[in-house]
Length: 326
Ligand code: SD4
Image 1 (tube, protein in one colour):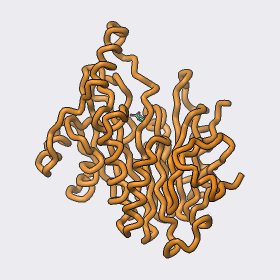
Image 2 (cartoon, protein in one colour):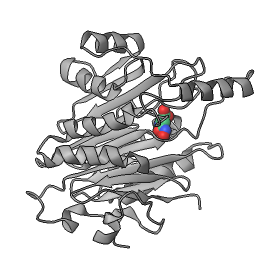
Image 3 (cartoon, rainbow, N blue to C red):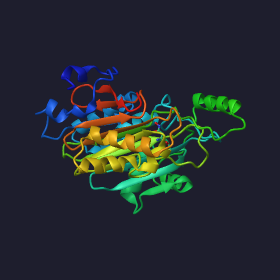
Protein backbone atom coordinates (compact mmCIF):
# COMPACT_ATOMS: atom_id res chain seq x y z
CA UNK A 1 0.00 0.00 0.00
CA UNK A 2 1.29 3.41 -0.94
CA UNK A 3 1.42 6.05 1.77
CA UNK A 4 -0.35 9.12 0.51
CA UNK A 5 0.24 12.74 1.37
CA UNK A 6 -2.96 12.65 3.45
CA UNK A 7 -1.56 9.83 5.55
CA UNK A 8 1.56 11.84 6.21
CA UNK A 9 -0.42 14.82 7.38
CA UNK A 10 -2.06 12.86 10.20
CA UNK A 11 0.34 14.28 12.74
CA UNK A 12 0.73 12.27 15.88
CA UNK A 13 -1.77 9.61 14.94
CA UNK A 14 -0.68 6.00 14.90
CA UNK A 15 -1.61 4.76 11.47
CA UNK A 16 -3.07 1.32 10.94
CA UNK A 17 -0.84 -1.75 10.75
CA UNK A 18 -1.69 -2.06 7.08
CA UNK A 19 0.73 0.66 6.16
CA UNK A 20 3.85 -1.13 5.12
CA UNK A 21 6.73 1.24 5.23
CA UNK A 22 8.89 -0.10 2.43
CA UNK A 23 6.98 1.90 -0.10
CA UNK A 24 7.42 5.22 1.63
CA UNK A 25 9.56 7.35 -0.59
CA UNK A 26 9.54 10.92 0.63
CA UNK A 27 12.04 11.82 -2.07
CA UNK A 28 9.34 11.08 -4.61
CA UNK A 29 6.34 12.22 -2.61
CA UNK A 30 7.89 15.58 -1.90
CA UNK A 31 9.92 15.94 -5.09
CA UNK A 32 11.06 19.45 -5.79
CA UNK A 33 11.19 20.51 -2.16
CA UNK A 34 14.97 20.74 -2.21
CA UNK A 35 18.01 19.91 -4.24
CA UNK A 36 17.08 16.26 -4.59
CA UNK A 37 18.07 15.03 -1.13
CA UNK A 38 15.14 13.60 0.75
CA UNK A 39 15.46 15.84 3.83
CA UNK A 40 14.15 13.45 6.42
CA UNK A 41 14.54 12.20 9.99
CA UNK A 42 13.13 8.85 11.09
CA UNK A 43 13.21 7.61 14.66
CA UNK A 44 12.29 4.58 16.70
CA UNK A 45 9.04 4.77 18.62
CA UNK A 46 6.20 7.02 17.67
CA UNK A 47 6.46 9.17 20.73
CA UNK A 48 9.80 10.50 19.51
CA UNK A 49 7.97 12.52 16.85
CA UNK A 50 8.93 15.79 18.56
CA UNK A 51 12.57 14.75 18.28
CA UNK A 52 12.07 14.05 14.59
CA UNK A 53 10.44 17.39 14.02
CA UNK A 54 13.29 19.20 15.76
CA UNK A 55 15.80 17.30 13.63
CA UNK A 56 13.84 18.20 10.52
CA UNK A 57 13.83 21.86 11.55
CA UNK A 58 17.63 21.73 11.61
CA UNK A 59 17.80 19.91 8.27
CA UNK A 60 15.53 22.50 6.74
CA UNK A 61 17.82 25.27 7.98
CA UNK A 62 20.62 23.61 6.05
CA UNK A 63 22.39 22.04 9.01
CA UNK A 64 24.06 18.68 8.64
CA UNK A 65 22.43 15.40 9.56
CA UNK A 66 24.65 14.81 12.60
CA UNK A 67 23.83 18.16 14.22
CA UNK A 68 20.18 17.67 13.30
CA UNK A 69 19.83 14.31 14.97
CA UNK A 70 21.76 15.47 18.03
CA UNK A 71 19.28 18.34 18.47
CA UNK A 72 16.38 15.95 17.97
CA UNK A 73 17.68 13.38 20.44
CA UNK A 74 18.17 16.07 23.08
CA UNK A 75 14.42 16.43 23.27
CA UNK A 76 14.02 12.78 24.29
CA UNK A 77 17.03 12.90 26.62
CA UNK A 78 15.75 15.99 28.44
CA UNK A 79 12.19 14.72 28.78
CA UNK A 80 11.59 13.50 32.36
CA UNK A 81 8.58 11.50 31.18
CA UNK A 82 10.58 9.38 28.76
CA UNK A 83 11.73 6.65 31.12
CA UNK A 84 14.04 4.93 28.63
CA UNK A 85 16.29 7.83 27.67
CA UNK A 86 18.46 10.35 29.55
CA UNK A 87 16.92 12.32 32.42
CA UNK A 88 14.10 10.26 33.94
CA UNK A 89 15.41 6.96 32.55
CA UNK A 90 14.77 3.90 34.70
CA UNK A 91 17.78 3.01 36.86
CA UNK A 92 19.65 -0.26 37.20
CA UNK A 93 19.19 -2.72 40.05
CA UNK A 94 21.23 -0.47 42.35
CA UNK A 95 19.01 2.53 41.62
CA UNK A 96 21.63 4.22 39.41
CA UNK A 97 20.74 5.66 35.99
CA UNK A 98 23.39 4.60 33.47
CA UNK A 99 23.21 5.72 29.86
CA UNK A 100 24.39 4.34 26.52
CA UNK A 101 24.60 6.30 23.26
CA UNK A 102 26.28 6.29 19.87
CA UNK A 103 26.61 8.32 16.70
CA UNK A 104 27.94 7.66 13.23
CA UNK A 105 28.38 10.16 10.40
CA UNK A 106 28.52 10.05 6.61
CA UNK A 107 32.28 9.57 6.60
CA UNK A 108 32.02 6.40 8.66
CA UNK A 109 33.28 8.12 11.80
CA UNK A 110 31.77 6.74 14.98
CA UNK A 111 31.65 7.59 18.67
CA UNK A 112 29.90 6.10 21.65
CA UNK A 113 29.58 6.10 25.42
CA UNK A 114 28.58 3.19 27.61
CA UNK A 115 27.30 3.06 31.19
CA UNK A 116 27.69 6.81 31.56
CA UNK A 117 26.40 8.26 34.83
CA UNK A 118 25.22 11.75 35.73
CA UNK A 119 25.31 13.36 32.29
CA UNK A 120 21.98 14.24 30.73
CA UNK A 121 22.95 14.26 27.05
CA UNK A 122 25.05 11.19 26.27
CA UNK A 123 24.43 11.66 22.54
CA UNK A 124 26.58 14.80 22.65
CA UNK A 125 29.30 13.06 24.64
CA UNK A 126 29.31 10.28 22.01
CA UNK A 127 29.60 12.92 19.29
CA UNK A 128 32.53 14.50 21.10
CA UNK A 129 34.27 11.13 21.51
CA UNK A 130 33.99 10.81 17.74
CA UNK A 131 35.17 14.34 16.99
CA UNK A 132 37.83 14.90 19.65
CA UNK A 133 39.46 11.56 20.30
CA UNK A 134 41.06 8.76 18.34
CA UNK A 135 38.74 6.26 20.03
CA UNK A 136 35.28 5.03 19.29
CA UNK A 137 33.93 4.10 22.73
CA UNK A 138 34.41 5.43 26.25
CA UNK A 139 32.78 3.69 29.19
CA UNK A 140 31.83 4.28 32.81
CA UNK A 141 34.01 6.57 34.91
CA UNK A 142 36.28 7.35 31.97
CA UNK A 143 33.35 8.50 29.87
CA UNK A 144 32.13 10.69 32.71
CA UNK A 145 35.57 12.18 33.29
CA UNK A 146 35.83 12.97 29.58
CA UNK A 147 32.38 14.61 29.62
CA UNK A 148 33.18 16.73 32.68
CA UNK A 149 36.51 17.80 31.21
CA UNK A 150 34.66 18.94 28.13
CA UNK A 151 32.17 21.17 29.85
CA UNK A 152 29.25 18.86 30.54
CA UNK A 153 27.82 19.25 33.99
CA UNK A 154 26.95 16.51 36.43
CA UNK A 155 23.26 16.17 37.27
CA UNK A 156 21.03 13.81 39.18
CA UNK A 157 19.17 11.91 36.44
CA UNK A 158 16.93 9.89 38.75
CA UNK A 159 13.51 11.53 38.84
CA UNK A 160 11.08 10.96 41.68
CA UNK A 161 8.88 8.92 39.35
CA UNK A 162 11.71 6.59 38.29
CA UNK A 163 12.94 6.26 41.88
CA UNK A 164 9.47 5.18 43.00
CA UNK A 165 9.24 2.67 40.15
CA UNK A 166 12.61 1.24 41.21
CA UNK A 167 11.59 0.99 44.86
CA UNK A 168 8.41 -0.73 43.83
CA UNK A 169 10.35 -3.22 41.72
CA UNK A 170 12.79 -3.88 44.56
CA UNK A 171 9.95 -4.57 46.97
CA UNK A 172 8.45 -7.09 44.56
CA UNK A 173 11.73 -8.77 43.58
CA UNK A 174 13.90 -8.86 46.69
CA UNK A 175 15.59 -12.17 45.84
CA UNK A 176 15.74 -12.06 42.10
CA UNK A 177 17.69 -9.01 41.09
CA UNK A 178 18.41 -10.27 37.60
CA UNK A 179 14.86 -9.64 36.42
CA UNK A 180 15.11 -6.83 33.96
CA UNK A 181 12.24 -4.79 32.64
CA UNK A 182 11.85 -6.06 29.07
CA UNK A 183 9.07 -3.58 28.45
CA UNK A 184 11.06 -0.44 28.94
CA UNK A 185 10.88 0.56 25.31
CA UNK A 186 11.28 4.13 24.23
CA UNK A 187 14.91 4.18 23.27
CA UNK A 188 15.49 6.68 20.54
CA UNK A 189 17.35 5.61 17.41
CA UNK A 190 17.40 8.20 14.66
CA UNK A 191 18.56 8.33 11.04
CA UNK A 192 18.67 11.63 9.17
CA UNK A 193 19.54 12.76 5.64
CA UNK A 194 20.57 16.37 5.03
CA UNK A 195 20.64 18.66 2.00
CA UNK A 196 24.14 17.46 1.15
CA UNK A 197 22.58 14.00 0.81
CA UNK A 198 24.61 12.88 3.82
CA UNK A 199 23.26 10.32 6.24
CA UNK A 200 23.96 10.08 9.98
CA UNK A 201 22.66 7.83 12.75
CA UNK A 202 22.37 8.12 16.51
CA UNK A 203 20.96 6.18 19.45
CA UNK A 204 20.42 7.14 23.08
CA UNK A 205 19.01 5.04 25.92
CA UNK A 206 19.02 4.29 29.61
CA UNK A 207 18.78 0.64 28.56
CA UNK A 208 16.76 -2.00 30.29
CA UNK A 209 15.28 -1.02 33.59
CA UNK A 210 16.75 -2.87 36.63
CA UNK A 211 19.71 -4.21 34.63
CA UNK A 212 22.79 -5.40 36.54
CA UNK A 213 24.99 -2.43 37.38
CA UNK A 214 27.58 -2.17 34.63
CA UNK A 215 25.46 -3.83 31.95
CA UNK A 216 26.03 -2.30 28.53
CA UNK A 217 23.41 -2.80 25.85
CA UNK A 218 23.45 -2.69 22.08
CA UNK A 219 23.08 1.08 21.79
CA UNK A 220 26.76 2.05 22.04
CA UNK A 221 27.95 -0.97 20.06
CA UNK A 222 28.54 0.22 16.51
CA UNK A 223 26.86 -2.15 14.08
CA UNK A 224 24.45 -3.53 16.68
CA UNK A 225 21.86 -0.83 17.49
CA UNK A 226 23.03 1.52 14.76
CA UNK A 227 25.04 1.50 11.57
CA UNK A 228 25.36 3.92 8.71
CA UNK A 229 27.06 3.66 5.34
CA UNK A 230 26.62 6.82 3.32
CA UNK A 231 26.74 4.90 0.03
CA UNK A 232 23.91 2.60 1.04
CA UNK A 233 21.77 3.66 3.99
CA UNK A 234 21.45 3.15 7.72
CA UNK A 235 19.63 1.15 10.36
CA UNK A 236 18.76 1.48 14.04
CA UNK A 237 17.42 -1.00 16.56
CA UNK A 238 15.33 -0.92 19.67
CA UNK A 239 14.20 -3.51 22.15
CA UNK A 240 16.16 -6.26 23.82
CA UNK A 241 19.76 -5.33 23.12
CA UNK A 242 21.23 -8.71 23.97
CA UNK A 243 19.59 -10.27 20.91
CA UNK A 244 20.50 -7.32 18.69
CA UNK A 245 24.15 -7.55 19.76
CA UNK A 246 24.37 -11.29 19.19
CA UNK A 247 23.30 -10.86 15.58
CA UNK A 248 24.89 -7.44 14.92
CA UNK A 249 21.52 -6.41 13.54
CA UNK A 250 22.03 -2.93 12.12
CA UNK A 251 25.21 -3.87 10.28
CA UNK A 252 23.40 -6.90 8.90
CA UNK A 253 20.58 -4.71 7.58
CA UNK A 254 22.92 -2.28 5.86
CA UNK A 255 24.83 -5.15 4.29
CA UNK A 256 21.58 -6.71 3.03
CA UNK A 257 20.65 -3.35 1.49
CA UNK A 258 24.07 -3.33 -0.15
CA UNK A 259 23.16 -6.69 -1.66
CA UNK A 260 20.05 -5.15 -3.19
CA UNK A 261 17.31 -5.68 -0.60
CA UNK A 262 14.91 -2.82 0.10
CA UNK A 263 15.04 -1.36 3.62
CA UNK A 264 11.84 -3.26 4.41
CA UNK A 265 13.18 -6.58 3.14
CA UNK A 266 16.43 -6.03 5.03
CA UNK A 267 14.64 -5.32 8.33
CA UNK A 268 12.53 -8.44 7.88
CA UNK A 269 15.64 -10.47 7.14
CA UNK A 270 17.31 -9.29 10.36
CA UNK A 271 14.26 -9.98 12.53
CA UNK A 272 13.90 -13.45 11.03
CA UNK A 273 17.59 -14.07 11.71
CA UNK A 274 17.04 -13.34 15.40
CA UNK A 275 13.97 -15.53 15.48
CA UNK A 276 15.85 -18.40 13.85
CA UNK A 277 19.03 -18.15 15.91
CA UNK A 278 17.88 -17.08 19.34
CA UNK A 279 16.06 -18.87 22.06
CA UNK A 280 13.57 -16.13 22.57
CA UNK A 281 11.71 -15.73 25.81
CA UNK A 282 8.11 -14.89 25.23
CA UNK A 283 7.42 -11.22 24.96
CA UNK A 284 10.87 -10.09 23.96
CA UNK A 285 10.38 -7.22 21.59
CA UNK A 286 12.91 -6.09 19.00
CA UNK A 287 12.29 -3.52 16.30
CA UNK A 288 14.41 -2.33 13.39
CA UNK A 289 14.10 0.83 11.37
CA UNK A 290 16.12 1.46 8.20
CA UNK A 291 16.43 4.00 5.44
CA UNK A 292 18.32 4.00 2.17
CA UNK A 293 19.84 6.91 0.30
CA UNK A 294 16.68 7.38 -1.76
CA UNK A 295 14.76 8.03 1.45
CA UNK A 296 12.91 4.71 1.31
CA UNK A 297 12.05 3.45 4.77
CA UNK A 298 11.71 -0.05 6.21
CA UNK A 299 10.58 -1.19 9.65
CA UNK A 300 9.85 -4.54 11.19
CA UNK A 301 9.55 -6.01 14.67
CA UNK A 302 9.13 -9.38 16.33
CA UNK A 303 5.82 -8.55 17.96
CA UNK A 304 3.01 -6.12 17.44
CA UNK A 305 3.34 -2.63 18.86
CA UNK A 306 6.50 -1.15 17.37
CA UNK A 307 5.96 2.35 16.02
CA UNK A 308 8.26 4.91 14.47
CA UNK A 309 8.20 8.59 13.59
CA UNK A 310 8.84 10.15 10.19
CA UNK A 311 9.59 13.88 9.95
CA UNK A 312 9.77 15.52 6.54
CA UNK A 313 8.75 18.81 4.97
CA UNK A 314 5.16 18.41 6.11
CA UNK A 315 4.15 17.64 9.71
CA UNK A 316 5.56 14.38 10.93
CA UNK A 317 3.76 11.07 11.14
CA UNK A 318 3.73 8.15 13.50
CA UNK A 319 3.63 4.84 11.67
CA UNK A 320 2.97 1.36 12.99
CA UNK A 321 5.46 -1.24 11.90
CA UNK A 322 4.59 -4.62 10.45
CA UNK A 323 5.75 -7.55 12.61
CA UNK A 324 6.68 -11.25 12.43
CA UNK A 325 4.79 -13.10 15.16
CA UNK A 326 1.17 -12.49 14.29
C1 SD4 B 1 19.00 -1.95 25.44
N1 SD4 B 1 18.18 -1.69 23.20
O1 SD4 B 1 19.69 -1.39 26.25
C2 SD4 B 1 18.16 -1.10 24.50
C3 SD4 B 1 16.81 -0.92 25.09
C4 SD4 B 1 15.80 -0.43 24.14
O2 SD4 B 1 13.71 0.16 23.58
O3 SD4 B 1 16.04 -0.19 22.99
N2 SD4 B 1 14.59 -0.27 24.49
O4 SD4 B 1 18.92 -3.17 25.35
